[in-house]
Length: 98
Image 1 (cartoon, rainbow, N blue to C red):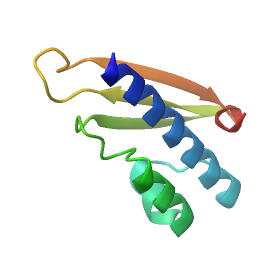
Image 2: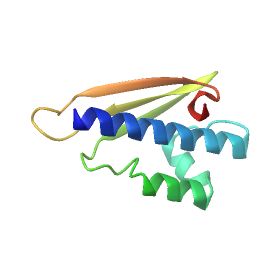
Image 3: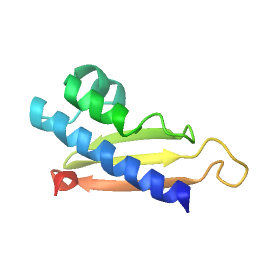
Image 4: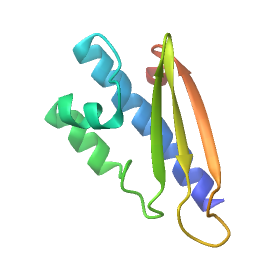
């Protein structure tokens, strides 16, 4: 339950950071690396402060831009009861900031 709650919060925060990137650049980043490299210090601080890509479970975050939005997938990497557990959330353009 704790993993699910934490992961859902991480997805929500990452989605907000991706939307902030879109607001600054006019399009979504092509990858999480581009998000981190091409964003403002404020957004990088937001990502670090909320421990989005560096959570206590060392989850694997994946991001896939789509025509009218994006998908975030998180896969658990550790723990015998979590290993391989996966959750995914799709967002339409602008939905993450609603």
